[in-house]
Amino acid sequence: MTSPRVEIDLGKIRANARYLVRRLGARGISVTGVTKAVCGHPDVAKAMLNGGVFGLADARVSNIIRMHAAGIRCPISIIRAPMAHETKDVIRFCDASYNTEMDTIQNLGAAAREKAIVHNIILMVEMGDMRDGVMPEDLNDVAAQVAATPGVALKGIAANFACLGNVAPTAGDLAMLSRLADQVEGECGPYVALVSGGGSANLPWALGEGSTGRVNNLRLGEAILLGTDPVTGHPITGLHTDAFALFAEVIETRDKPSAIPPASIVPEFGILKLVRNDDLRTRTILAVGQQDTDTSGLTFPSGVMFIGATSDHTVVDTVKSTVPVGSEMKMGMNYSALMRAMSAPDVAKTVHGKQKMNGSSKDCETQPYLTLV
Image: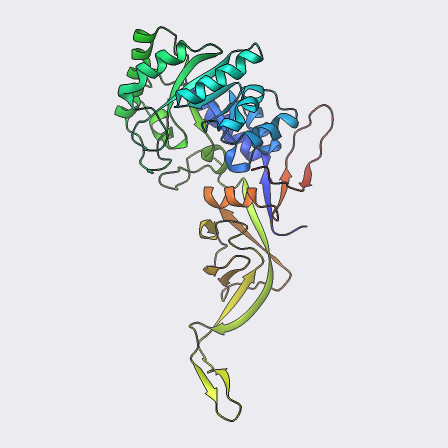
């Protein structure tokens, strides 16, 4: 098979989505599957939908267009505020958009009126992550302006947690979000149908025993894809953590000094010569590098130790493991490594476990990948 490549187990993604949908559904919380880490890969999106997610969300219009072109028809939201040149595509391909700026919302309203439709707006509220969001004290004023803007409708409010700041939310944070939804309804009039309380970092709270208040939605990417908590990196009980694996070919295996050897000049030739060091270790080079993935986010087989990486090479210590040239090494990935690998044009993507759609499918299909971002 082509190497390097990411192998994707769609069955495990479906199972993760199904588990979270069931557990959160019992708490009155719907799940939106976030596809940005896989660049809107249609097969992964379909696996999420087959697992029962309410809809999909992505940060890039190009990824959403990719899913639309693959025949995916479900509620899709763009969770990064649209740029000016994306306005018409957002109106065409997205059921809702997450926003903070009135200029952007007014542009969306104007584009929606041209199409004789109403576009749904979800206002992002700043709750301490210090990334995107309207300050809580300004929310009622902005919500009133949205409600008065032709062509758009205020569908809900949302917050981010542990995205930029990597700080897990507290029950108090989510209770405040519920109170803000009540205030918007009380002062601005429109019913706040969606109160989206963040992403995978919110699962410990959402699956706990406390009240969920008005929060009725979570946007889940990492938990469904990798089965891990974004804040701690720890596995989430009940979820698969190996739905994705990176494979790279071994292009060199050789004994080399454990430290950089000293150099000397051979007088008669005037050339540089490395002084031999008998403290040798087996070093293996993999044909994958920083251009392909975040090598610091890889996990290696037992007995293999990461040494370092350059743009196109990853060097590991394999003194305890036999890995001949031409063989492949299988590695796990964290969220950053997955995101980089899925967007890299030279990393093939192979899917396993496709479900039949429209009467035909293949169990395993390797797809060339075009970067759409």
